[in-house]
Length: 112
Image (cartoon, rainbow, N blue to C red; front, side, top):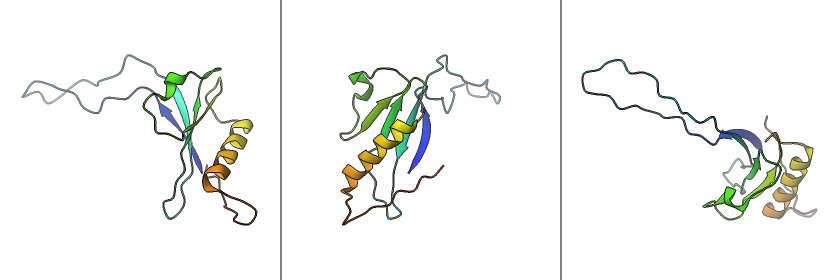
């Protein structure tokens, strides 16, 4: 299990210039963007469960996940970072998705 931040604004990878120019100015985005935290769990053999998105908001709006795959779990937090309650929420999501039980336990290690 790991946590990472993803920017909502993409950085441009390349620039277009006239033929013959060797030096090109740096391209930048005018938008600042926000950071969305993504929590994922993947096993050593490649089994994965749907991720948990933590949006930097107080309230969730349905259009945040337009076009997203089914099964994604989401939370909101003013800072956008994972807190204790979000960890519990992800563990419950992990148990539901992996069908973990007392008879068939699954182990989840936190990678920071």
